[in-house]
Image (cartoon, rainbow, N blue to C red):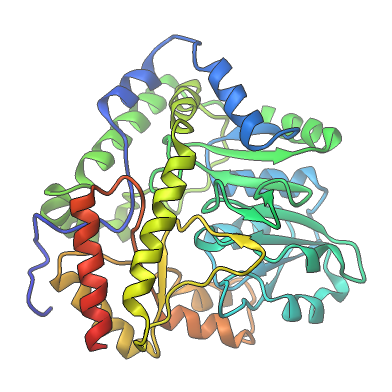
Length: 399
């Protein structure tokens, strides 16, 4: 590695992983004062929608699939360029994933490829990637009616043609695990406005096992530890070096577990507090994304786009490089300037191939090799964001 050592006490973390001591106390408390503010927040952001809570976003997708009758033998469209959680939820439901390409600008489902492959689809999972909403109208105008599930793990506060993400399909799935736009520990949520779908979802979720008290305490301790090491100075000196060595073996960020469970009450108590200030956080992220984009004008690096019909929340600032080599040089340059980055979904084509993907989605294949993301969230201090901005500007000047 050039220049800066892997151990760097000032390294800006790639994700916003926040879990404080007060969150720990709130999660383990016995107060029910969180119930009213949580109901009010859900009604404010998703009016008329009913929630069903589970322990993760992928379980929320599974719950949505089962509640919509998408099970054994159903064919469900999914983007190649996304998290394995989407593929695995479809397979876990008994359905067959049909892999779809994505649009090079929005990084979400490509309407042209969707229409081309829609002849035998029963459903589709529309992922709002990095906070940019998928183009939803084409999904509702296909020759054959398909059931639409929104994956809103990145998209709390995103909007499509003025409508809030999560209200645009037959059901929606959210992840509130650490590192997401709203993080509350081990928690996911399914939303729907269809009372029959919600009734079925509640029946299914009621059969999931509860989290034991011991397991809940362990989850809270692990969440607090992750929140502690995912900030300077500990991220660069402890979190990243340890994660680089042990994450694949021990799943430190709990990215691969798939154990459907009911949520803990403690996680819901933490969630109720997380909606406070959300509009401000989205506004700050958008302002910061605009600053970063301005530094890439006239360079070979493409900043993220925002379609005319979209309201992007910039969960991540996704830069597209001209080729894999340029991306690797960009990642090294960012690290040299004290900023960590993510090659999001770089293995998605190979992982999708294990689920039956036939390598026929050229744009997704290209994006897996060329996308690199940096943080621009509101929880970065102005000083920390200055590091990110300086690093992006420096990389743009030399790549």
